[in-house]
Length: 155
Image (cartoon, rainbow, N blue to C red; front, side):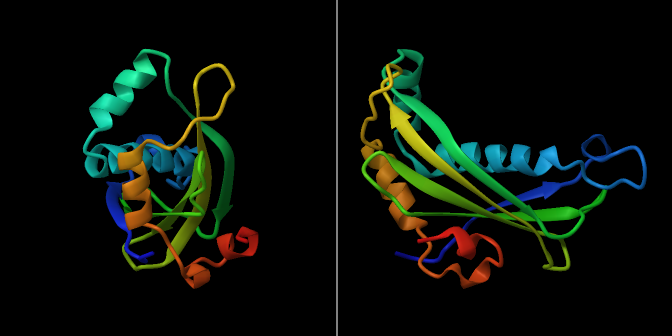
């Protein structure tokens, strides 16, 4: 286990905010989780195209089975957001992804978690693809003290 993070940077655009005051609309945090997750897989799983081929052939399905969001502070139009992605709690068929979002002043704005599992499109769980397992292991978090809210839901 390591505590290294996969880092994404994002500039907040006006279309991601509400009409009053330029405050980021809440659903964008979950959208940014998804964008970070996808970039993580593309960048860290060498056989990602092969994994996606199995998805297109309806042989492998990646499912978000759980999601938690904790909003700690507002983000605003023009903010530079750093998204730190870590993994953990890997099992045979599932693992967790943890997201820590900070502004340019290194203030934590948001903590999020997604549990991903894999099935065969018929409801039967299947093993995590091997290259994805290696990637998950290399970004696995062992110290939850960096999280204020998520550490409360960890085993």
